[in-house]
Image (cartoon, rainbow, N blue to C red):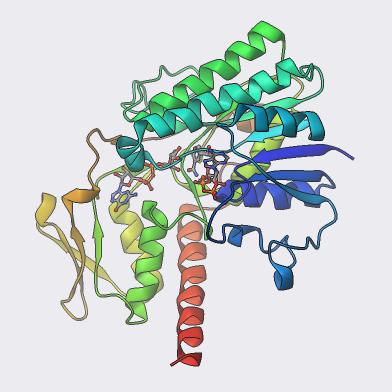
Length: 359
Ligand code: NAP
Ligand code: F7E
């Protein structure tokens, strides 16, 4: 039985990856941070619902307290678990927040990655443990080429992107210096019903569901023109695994090869709840109007703008398709929006039922 260790297991990708590896028959270990509030919601399909967090229903799934910035903790966990595969997904992953917390973002996303690689080296696990580093399309930032592929030069535009550049290069450096199987997945935006609620897609899908059910009046957004290559997170975790199964340690771009504006995401999401959006105005005065009622449902709030923006990202997944046999278009953009809105419609309905029980 293969043993995997996932940092960031409580996040969107970590939770899907844990499920994927358990289904493949792995023994899965995950690192969770001590928190004053419950942080294991995304793991509830794996954890025993009735004793959430206390008892584990799956004998092959183990959680450990830890933090990638705590060097001694990382070394201790690695020496106890001695994983065959290590997926370093832990990160301060919010680009806008990284402008508020640049130092912290560097500690987690940059130094945290070094701590993982050093633990493998110090413990003599270089021949045993394969390391996957969660790199990102944010490395391309102000894009130097369209579409972006493995050879496209980087130009990050946020403290997050700059911290992740360190993670990228230190992973490559450990591969070359110590002959480690240490690789980068350069993943473009990927979303799901488990996406954090302050990322734009989830903010929109949740707002569409709440507005449709009369629980919210309006949605305020930042840059509606921003273009992203959005895929489905469940499809992308499969690729993380494929990258580690490849015979050679190499870096891969993972993307759909299609990009859409934030505005398009809004239109589709509202369409799914039976609302047609019409746009009026320009720039900060742009409004999304409910065509049937004339109500303003979307406006622009400059507080969601970033000091430096990444205007467009479009990935070229040819290498992953050719060498790994991965299908970049398994879930279409339209299907992704539908999955997210449908899940949020159910979530809002459930919240309302629970609220009524206590009225
Ligand atoms: P996410 O939902 O924000 O999850 C991040 C995870 O990291 C959470 O489990 C979080 O724990 C954990 N974490 C944060 N700081 C930590 C620390 N100091 N020590 C240990 N764990 C820590 O992110 P995601 O969307 O799943 O993304 C996974 C990884 O892929 C991240 O590295 C992200 O930067 C990268 N990435 C994401 C995308 C995307 O579109 N989703 C694209 C490219 C790359 P808590 O639950 O306790 O906060
Ligand atoms: O923004 C614009 C915003 O925060 C997408 C992370 O997973 O993907 C993610 O980073 C776009 C940006 O994701 C709002 O300005 C407009 O242009 O959903 P986001 P992100 O910044 O692309 C990369 C690949 C990662 O690696 C990161 O970890 O949407 N936008 N209005 C908005 N964004 C937010 N959050 N909120 C708005 O109201």
